[in-house]
Length: 88
Image (cartoon, rainbow, N blue to C red; front, side, top):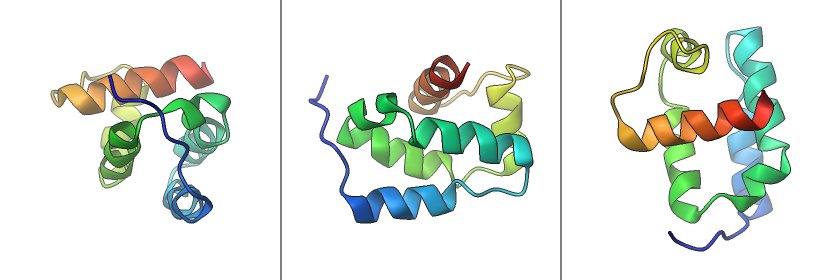
């Protein structure tokens, strides 16, 4: 596994802005994750995957985070699990 590299402040600010969603539940979940110490331990690849994950529609994200569906994308699924374990 690649070594964690703390993202720069510009990247964090951009991702924090992207975490503002149309659903209050996702806003809270994603804001708590990006503010957590665990976020700073993500690898550069995981941060890039997180950025891609934020491109997904809100209803789909909610189904993954609520465990109603399992994401078929292995990388997304790994990150969804990390996020769920961090903010649970």
